[in-house]
Amino acid sequence: MITRFSVAMTTSTALRLTEHLRRADGQEDCTFVLWRPSTGSRRTTALIGDLALPQDGDRIVHGTVDFTSEYFLRAVGIAAEHSCGLGFIHAHPRGRRWQRLNAIDHAAEESFAAQAITLTGLPLVGMTFAGADARYGARVWQRHAPRTYVPTEAENVRVIGDRFTVTFNDTLIPPPEATNRQVRTISAWGQDTQNDLARLHVGVVGTGSVGMLVVEALARTGLQNLSLFDFDTAEHLNLDRLLHATDRDVRLHRAKVDIAARAARRSATGANIRIATYESSVVEPDGFAAAADCDLLFSCVDRPWPRAALNLLAYAHLIPVVDGGISVDARGGRLRGAEWRAHVAAPGRACLECLGQYDPAHVPVERDGLLDDPAYIKGLPADHLLRRKENVFIFSASAAAAQLNQFLTMVTAPSGIADTGAHLYHLTTGSIDQRLEGCDPGCPYHGPLRALGDHTPVDITGRHIAAEQARAARRDALRRRLLRFQQGLDDLLSRYR
Ligand SMILES: [Zn+2]
Ligand SMILES: [Zn+2]
Image (cartoon, rainbow, N blue to C red; front, side, top):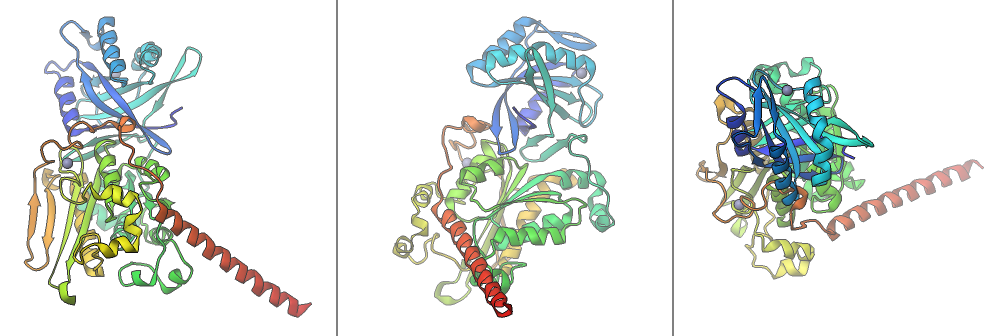
């Protein structure tokens, strides 16, 4: 049973829908659509794929909208044939923002909810299109008792592409309480934008040098719902780059993700920040599922396997991924140059594979554990991408800022511009290269994998030995500390006996 529900679609699907649903005569219109599930750990999303548009004579438009049973049967047949669920969208021509289900629409959708699930195996998704601003409300019809179908309202409807537009259900996710800590922030973009930004569920994958800065910025900006992912432990050699980390954290073998959560709680300007921490990699099944619960992800990892998983989340699960990276040229022990990148992986934009952010040939190498094998790494040429570790805090700050700007541009579209392309910054020349084209021809993320969700034929998740070892080492360290504490206590008590 789905308890938390969301709907996502690409910008190109949304444009086709708008073209169909906005009638010149101002009448209501409707269409059936196909959807596939994307199952997270707590939330299920319906990914809208193909449209089964009505043909002449399929619908009866008379103030409200109705359709023939032939049209329903044709659409449900196409859905079943493609192992998809059936969705039904109708328009409220003058509506704005989230459209709640009224009594007439409730009765109409209820009347075919049973047939839809019987014929497709998936529950009916109902959606209402607000004609004035092209936003949506949505719900899923599930069986609660024999012949009793009840709508569960979606939390939000997300449209993903050049821009990222999320319409929230104010009843389930109310706008944040106003606080006097965000006066300057709100003066920059207004209360409506703040309400949309603050309610986004953002995941930060990797809370190392770049991720820690991203978390800080999101908490300060007032975002209320963060999920943080990292299996690593803070070490002495991180301290020159890891914001908020202290010597004491290293001595206590603290997980980086716990340091990030502690800092985010202190820096938060929103009234009720919720932070979930995952000591897992996004390639482990539980990490991947928790990432699929998010509306948007920051990729602050540099390994090929997690990047491949994030690429899949961006295109197959329609969760935009703000990615970046740093490359320092320190041949001969001297700084010759540095580059950092920032871009968003999302349908219509170039994917991480096409941007060269990872080599798919390295994914199986990492899955086999070879990238954590010192002997394998030592065998690679000295200047190999997978061997290079040089970095400094200043470049991390630059990369984090560049990623945060990509995020802000995509969500707020200053002056109507949401996509400024993928950016590559050069320290030596002070210049920026922009890539505006999408994926290379034939890229599977751009084509066949798009919006497949749970039906994706490849399983990118698996056992991650290094993550398991890091967690086990932390547990051992904690056990040793407790033991020492207990011994100290016993010594103390014995003196008073
Ligand atoms: Zn209606
Ligand atoms: Zn691609």
